[in-house]
Length: 393
Image (cartoon, rainbow, N blue to C red; front, top):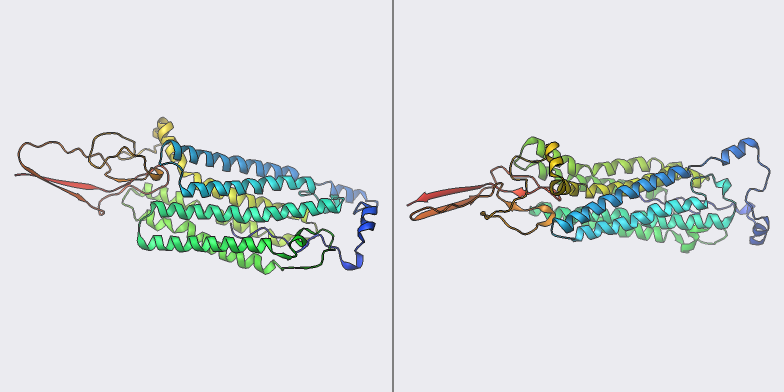
C-alpha cells in the first residue's frame, strides 16, 4: 500500500532532434515502418495480456466476495451499515475502476512491447488510462485504510488508543489528499501527462525522489495501522489460543505491507518499453488494494459461519466452550438488540437471579480483572466477568 503508481514524465516523448511534424507523423501512420528481423518479430510477439486479465479478474472476485459477505453479515445479523462499511464500499469502487482500467489498457498496448503500439493515438490513450489508474490506486488505498481506523474507533476502548487512532486517521486523510494533488498536477499543463508525441510545451515533476520518500512515509503509517490493535488484543484475559488467533486476525494487514514492498521493487525497472515493463508493478498495485479490502472483510466470515453453518464451526473447533454461542433468555445483562460488529459488553454466561425467600441483599460487581472474551470485528464478543454476592438477612 505504499507508493502510488506514477511513471516517469512523458514516457513516450521523442527527442527534439528526431521529432516529426504532426502532418508527417500522420502521413507515416506507423511508428515502426522498417522491415523487422525474425528475432525482432518474435520479441514483439510476446504478450503478458493473459497475466494482466487473469490477475485482475481473480482480485475483483475475491474483493467483491469479501465485501458482499461483510454487507450481508452487517445487514442480517449485526447493527446494519456503518460509516466504516461505507468507506470500505467506496474503496471497492475505486478498486474496481483500477482493475477494470488495467484490463482496458491491454487494448492499447499494455502487456505487449511498445513497438507493437502502431499509432500515437493509441499511446496517448494508454497514458490517459494510466492517469486514471494512478488516481484510482491512491483513492482506493487511502479509503480502505480510513475504514480500518474507523473500525478501531468503534470497537477498542482506551483514551490514549483512541487519540492515537484519530491522529493516524488524520494523517492518512491528509496524505491521501496530498497524493491525489500530486497525481493530478504532476504536469503543467495537466494534459502533458498523457502527451505521447512530446510536442506539448510545459514541465513535469521528476517523480523518482517522490517514489521512495512516499513509500517510506506510507510504510511507517501502515505498520502503525496494522500493529496498533495487537497489544490491545494480547491484554485480554482469555486462553492463549484465542489471543493468538485474534492477534493473527488483526495482523493480517501486514500482508499489505509485504505486497507494497514487492511492488516498490518493480518501480525502478521502467524503461522506454513501458507498456511491457510496468506489468509487474501494475499487477502488484492491484493486489495491494484488493488484499487490503479482503482482509478488512475477513472477520465477517466468522459471524457468517456462526449463524449459517454452526455444524462447520463445531467441526473446526471454533466455538468456545462458553459465552460464544448466541442465546436468548431473560437474564441479567442480556439484550435482544443487535450489536455493532456483534460486539457487546456482557457477562460470559447468562446470569439468572433466582428469587430468594426472605429479605435479601444482592451485590453485583463487574471486575475487569476477571477473564474476558476477546475483541474482534464481526463475531466475537467483549465480555466482563460478573461476581454476585447474595446475602440473606
